[in-house]
Length: 256
Image (tube, one colour):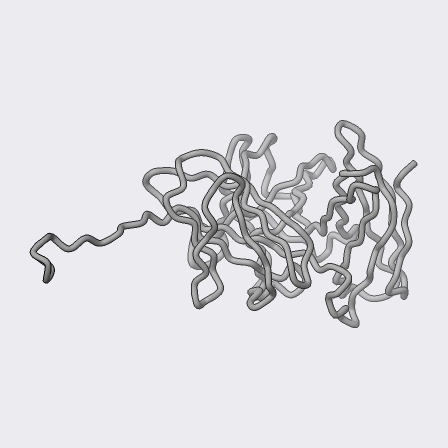
């Protein structure tokens, strides 16, 4: 009983989604960037001292968590809210033009169809990630070997089979403390054997309403690096090669 003779009441809120913002270039947590995090139609999140954004009392269902602001472009990731488990998601924040450009980076800027998705990944597979075991169609959990100290939570990847077929996958969160088993934000559409399958990190962005885009890439592979760019506009896919070379700026036109 409280001092007024009535039962004291405590507001109880249910944790639904915990969001960590991560710098896509460095893999480090983003803090103090004036970023805004939101889910359309839901209450704003609670910002914790450690920088995480907490959504409470979100009804069960599929949602997209969005973030933008500060030195970063807008980005979103799908997640599922269930009654029995809180969802932990990582959003990889993409640098904008105000971001201090690292010396081992290259800026790709140009034109594409308005709203088209651009995805760039390295052609060199010698440093690609590997499957720890075969991955089956319909699976939402994949074992990935990527070396120590690499944070791939929230990262878009491309899984490529021995016959060069493949698909894009996004890491929703680590499933274990060793960061070897990862939950995806969707199901695999094909089977992938352990032997011969590779997984490459993907840099991504979306062209604006005028078709303009910019994407900062961390090269780290030296002069002469070659990358593949896929521009996805609805059912249309344009594929081109980018020769990074020794330049730190590339102008590209995918609007044709």
